[in-house]
Length: 359
Image (cartoon, rainbow, N blue to C red):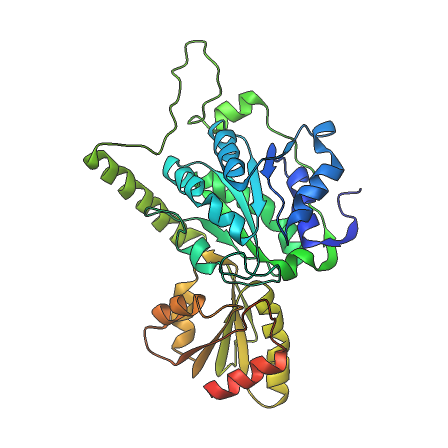
């Protein structure tokens, strides 16, 4: 396949192909709907024969995240993918990775819950992913793609950010983007790093080598309270730096807007159609789409709240991101939530009606 060839594929398939091309060293995962095509595509492509990438179906999601933990300790580009209940099982390992300051990629193709729920799409893992679903004061870098193209593009970006800040990163998508087919241009192939390059780029990594070099110990355990507080303060300083430097968002028709919709992922796609319908009816409305759910574009929401008459949070859940919008808006403008539950995707006309209730 040529590097710039336009291909039709599912979002899940784009994740897999991008992982191979961006120099991923290892994938460890377990099948669960609606993300199983990630593992299936990797198995079909057999990258261990071409790039040397390891692909392993683990015995469980718990095993998967711990394999990612081990691979990340060596400075390798490693990843896993799952869907909502599977991510719940990974929470302890994700917290361990954050505490040990290990880079890695977790892909969550959300389905409806709670519990086993439904295999239909949802956006109800916002709290779990953006607020630190495991234990302790930690954060994940969370990217929310709204197209199959972004599913491919965000793999390399997620790894880049994860290694830049020594922090786990997550691509948070849903069954709509994971299962839909769109045209995509896959990224060019990257050469996998040599062991010498990994040692140079990741001096913190443990590589198993001796030769007089002091071995690195990677752990999230610290039994002394004073030292644990120092570690936590260092983490918080890192998170503050990420918030200052890595906020990403998209604006759509906001220049003359009197009202605004805030939506991410597949909800933002529906929001754009709803905005076209609303504008045809004389309602000046635009979209703010967070691309990084964490760090959340709070500053941009705050600015927006000072110049519009109302904000509608469109989410396929009972209302999660709306809490961050209200915090950022600081009470300066009405903020309402609209969403459907149980895997139901709202019609654009439903969103317009919800917008009218805000007006």
